[in-house]
Image (cartoon, rainbow, N blue to C red; front, side):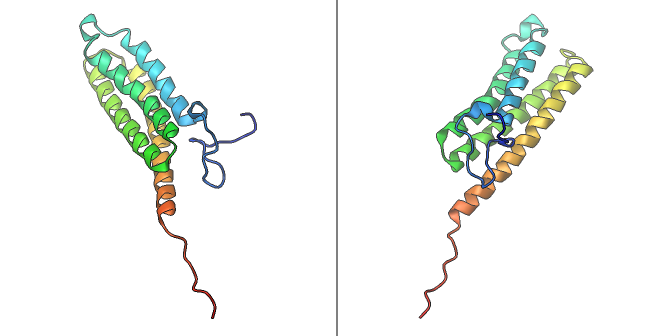
Length: 151
């Protein structure tokens, strides 16, 4: 895909979906980076958290790119918006659980700051994507203004 700027989420200049492959979407790629970071950070959690907070963090992180991929693959703006909204909710869960992990001293301030910056970046992308999809959905529902025929 060299030479093609698909934007954050893969829309072309006219608002059409410019890519049929969700893996090309920057927001999905950011989500995958979050997954990798979560798995690295949770390796250092106490053993008793393997099926607790560590597992919840991993599930929430995986949910972000998984929902972007599923929504993109559904093929309709309405469905894509629904799944992007779910991904955004999973991101909020992830951020909250990272705050808990920091408060319990499972991760240090430096690691916390890095992952929260990535969460913030991903959140901005998801928010922009939601706004774009909402606008596109509204324009699809609005009938084109028709002029009455000339007599």
